[in-house]
Image 1 (tube, one colour):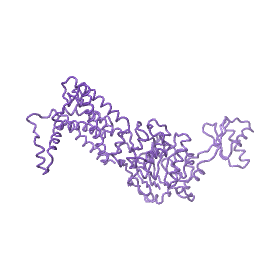
Image 2: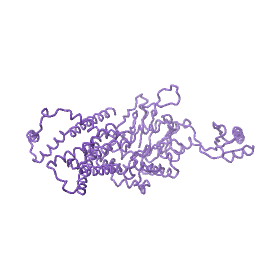
Image 3: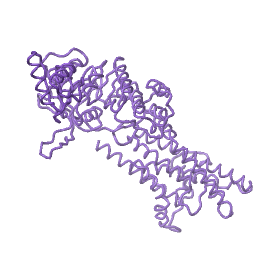
Image 4: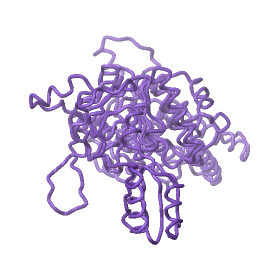
Length: 604
């Protein structure tokens, strides 16, 4: 059961006229309900506020009013994907991701088992197109995938914005069958449309709005009877004379016939007659006819009696009933002059299984593997060239870090993958369609940090091992000797790649673009390192020698002597100009990320 009460938009309606007409909202005190076991159509002309009403129900836009989904507003539903499925426009997914990959990624977000993806592909008829890229899908296939995404959490309510627009008749019939099947299973279905015929064909209950306000709330039979009328469409160069003849013969035969002349002057709409009768009249008087066809006429919304209100798909209410009584008690607040409660635009919730979601998001497109392959190839090539002259230290050779480059390829690649962790989602918001940004949830952020850090460590390890094997094959094994400070070098190498990945991730999350993450990574050696190198050196710098022992005494703890080596390696890493610059950049980015997150929460 869906109950929308007093929905009012805070965004004013735009009028085509330049005359001052006040600040009428897009949706104005809209109240109706959509019952279970029934398909309900929200009908209105383009610009009447249908989509704005859906966004108010889903708390995507600020306003006033309240919408109950089986007695609870959406923000109080613990698992929204299991209560409401939404189709607003196209599938909000990366165009390079496959249909199966998109559904599997969203399974982790909704907390559904991964097998649900294949079940839904079969249900919507995409079982043979699971490996097809989203960007290559046709409009009909895209709409099927969007419905599969909406059904992922097995929701009770489906909200769809003009779902059959642009579809071929066959695909539209299939979609109507899916909506009816969901309703017959006890679910609630609400869809918007601007076509009265579509509303009559699909829905068992029709809610008509105009200029954001309720015009009629009817069951399907009452809607067809009052809104849709059969007519004869006639086109003739002598339309005015033919209209007079048809009206005169109808009066003579005492038949109720209405003739309406269209604006162009050559077309008539004849209500209460038939093609045969109109054609015989034109033939008898020698009038040429260029068009003669049966149509279903659409009366204006204002012509629908508001007194034909009805509850869901049940019998129509008694004539004269106020349409606002479709939801019991909805008019009480308006009678007392009270405003409906405010609707606050709330950030979307994070995935229920964030680590699994992040892994499927990261490896669901070719970008990740392409970046890693390019980094690996560039690192191997640079390592072989650096080892040729014999003057570059072995650690720099294995890391493929010539002095001409600000950062080695592995660090740049890790920073790029980290930047894509947030920038990619801001472009294709799979979690929050219509909300504009990925939710800044702590669980999702920690998952992104963990996954990006793990990928950076994997990339760093693969680069070193592959470079070492390439050097052994090209120059022999004499070049490869384990240095005495191998532990310190390993910590430094790992810290560099992980730090670059996190810098790119946090910067992309703050500025919401991938380019900002890449710029933050490049700024570390180009801008921050020179700043750190200008700090005091020599005798003015205090030594941290003996730090592990002092920490052990302070904390009254005992740890293995091997831990002292790791701790000193970390300290030396931070003391290095690049390490210090990276640590400073990460500290600034973390503070900025927390500041923007808190400011966003206050604004919401």
